[in-house]
Structures are given as C-alpha cells and as structure tokens.
Image (cartoon, rainbow over all chains, first blue to last red; front, side):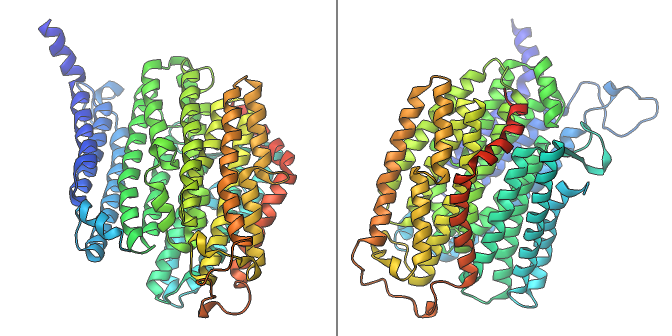
Length: 126
Length: 492
C-alpha cells in the first residue's frame, strides 16, 4: 500500500504541488484586499503554470538538450520545447507585472491608497 | 501575394513601433502613419479574402519550416472575413479618434495610437494563427494593449484596467494550462496536427479537463455571463476614441478562438461534445437574460451598452451551442453585425459626448435636431439590436432560430425571443429619450464643438456603420454563402 502511494507521489506528486501553488495564487487574488498583494499572488499563479510546463518536459535519465558526444537517442535528452515556450511565458508575465505596477503607481497617485476599501470609497466621488 | 497573411499582421505592428517616434514630429503624424498601415492591411485582407474564396484556404509557413515543427498562419473564409472586419473597424476607429485628443501632448497622443495599433495587431494575429501557443502570445498582446487603453480613460479607468489586468491574467493562465494538457497528450502545438492526433489517440478525460479550462479562459476574455465582472466598467471607462474598437471587436476574437477549439481541434465526433454544447447553451442563455436585465437598469448609456454586450455575446455563443451549420452561420453573421452595431452605437455616443459633453440618458432630450445623422445611426443600430428587418440583427437571429428549430431545441428560441423583447425595452427607452423627451437644461452644445454636426473625421465612421448595418442585412445571403464554404468543411 505505502509503496503504491510512494510510487504515485514520485510520479505524479509534482503536479499536485503545482496545482496547489496555482490554487494559492488564485485564492490570494480573490481574498487579499491590498492591490499589491493581489499582483504578487498573480505572479505566484503564473509561476505555477511555468512549473507545470517544465514538468511536462521532464523525463528520467535525460540530460539537457545540447548535443553530447555518444548520446544520439531521443530518450537521452529532455524535451526542450516546453522550456522554450516558458521563456515566452516568462516574458509575458514580466510585461504584465510591469503594466500592473505602473497602474498601481497611478492608482496610488490618484486615490492615495492601494487598499480596495478606500479605493471603492473614493471611486464613488469621481 | 504569397506573403499576404503575414503582411496583414506585420503592417500594423511596424506602424505601432514607428508611431511614437513619428509622433515626436507632430502630434497627428503618428496617427496618419498608423491609419495608412491599417488601411493597407484592410486592402490586403480584402485581397486575401478574394483569394481564399477562389482557391481555398491558405497555409503560410514561417521560414518555410513545415508543420508541426514550424509555426503556420492558417486562413480560411471564416477568419478571412474576420480579418477584414478587424481592419475595417480599426481604420474607422483611427479616423474617429482625432477630436478626442483633448491634449496635444505628443507622447500621450502617440502612445494612445501605438496601443490601438498593437491591439489591432494582436487581434489580427489571434485570428490568423494556426498554432495554439502563438494564439496565447497574440492574446497577451491584445490584452496588454487593452489594459493600457482602458487605463488612459481617467481615474476610474485606471482601477477598471487594474481589475481587468488581474482577471485577464487569470484567464490567460487558465488558457495556458489547457494548452499544456493538450500538449501533454499530443506533443504538438499546431492546430490541424493536434486535431489529427486527438481524433486517433485522444485521452477523453484529459481533453474534458482541458476544455473546461479553455471555456473558462475564453469565456472570461469575451465576458460571458459568470465571467463578465470586469467588462462593464472596463468598456465604460476605456479611452473614448478606442471604445468602439474595444467593445465592438475585442470580445469577438476569443469567441472565434473557442470556435476553433471546439469544431476544428476537438471535432464533433468527440465523446463529450454534447456536454460542452449543453454547458455553453446554459451559459449563453444566462448571459442573454442577465445582460439584458442589467442593461435596462442603467442610466449611463455607456454602461447600458456594455451590459448589452454581455447579452449579445450570448447570442454568438448560442450559435456555437446549437452547432448546426446554419446556426454557426447565424453566430458569425451576428459577430459581424454586432461589431458594426455596437461599434456604431459607441461612435454615436462619442459624437454626442463630443458635442454636448454628456453620456447620461436623461440629458438626451431631443438631440435629434442638432445631430440628425448620429441619431439616425442610433435608431438603425437600436432596431438592429432588437432584430427588426431589414437590419442585420434580424437575419442573424433568424438563422439562430432556424438552427435551433432544426435540432428541436425550442427552449433556445423562447429565450431568443424573450431576450429580444428585453432589448426592445431598453433600446426604445433610448429612442424615446432622443426624439420625444423634453430638451434638458444641460444639453447645450459645448463651445468647442460649434458649427456642423460633428467633424468630417467623425462623420465617416458614423455613415459607414449606418450603411454596413443595412447592407449586411440586405445582402446577408452572400455573406452566409461565403461562411458556408468554410463551415461545411470544418464542422459537420
């Protein structure tokens, strides 16, 4: 019994961890009242997806996808495509975070606070 | 000619890069650059449409790497038509933005034009691409430029933009998870390759989960009922000049993406396909009723139109949920029609705001005397929203109803009629305000907007939308024939 659970966790456990991270980020976006914290939680969520893709590319006994002498079988190398995709995703998340921070600066300037309650109160006056 | 698909996307992208630089010379110079680029794209997309109709769908391989290794652009008649639509509304929006540039600050005006141009690039790319990850990248380009445009709309716009940024990023992340699961099953990112592999070795359970993520992601981006929370304030407070583009076209492109996933990648033979149709049907019915009811309660015309967009997205998704070729045609016809209706209504709203400086419904008393053309557009677009022949709104709803009757889903027809009646309530309220209500004290023309009704730049989009709503309705058979070419091949 224990060995089955161990084998299952060794094989699939990482997916549970990434989805836990995703759920953490998502719940943080919903629960936190502070906009800065919301933005941080958004980043945590994006990192979870990056881990998810990297897990897909992983395989036992594979090395980095750079040609090594004597290794020519596909099984010897991990799949480089998810890493390539995640480079793009990281750039996108950088862009999103940048825009988010710029917006936060402007919100602080206009509303004097980045707490949700205060912003909602001020918003009614505009 | 061989490079048409990529040139259409590339031209606005290059113009966006140059725009800010050229704006340094004169604050209007950047706008003309971008307008020229989008017009060029419009001409090329019409050429591409003719080519696709004559010779069948076009595959464009980047760097001549064959799929599934390379990235491809895939254009058939459905997305060729959508390309034309995006370029047309984009060009009209650029004509229309000038009078809104209250400031002559070169950087600010240039930046706004750059963002609109990037928005057009993103939408064109999402439509033309044949690669699921490429679609994600273009989705993010679209979203990022939309965040910036919404935040340019003043104090409330910034908060609306930040909320949309959070929700939109969650949606993009969910999309990425869906793609990840599908990539895990198939090991490919090309749409047609993925469809071929899924139909042979698909893992039905994993595909089901992936589709749930995709529906949530696209549903958020197009503001379908349970995911629509960001939409009304974002549409209301977006930068005034870009509002027709954001509200008219931006929501439609994710709907088209959902169509690609459902009918081209999953295919109608998929085991749980009926389940998706029922889920989408329920979502669309809720959307149609909820959007219409909330729209009735609004006093600001922009908010009213934004809630009405939630309802109208429901019609488009209803067409996908019925799933017969005729209903799909109805959905796409509604997509085109609604882009002109909602775009046109926002053009008209902007013109009224330019003239009188108000967007409150109670201040609209008898403005038809001062603005006959604008009010003509308001009336035609309203009638089209309700679905009165010969406007396009009637025909798209007709095709939807015929499709629903064909599969025996009469509940959809009942909801369609009910939602149209609700539409009638709030659009007749608008017409009543414009023509019958006493002139309010506030409706005095702004000193800056003396003279003719509106400037010529603003007049052209208004007249074009007016004509498009009527002509699309009268000649709808031609559009449906063109759409059928692709839909027959893709679905069923």
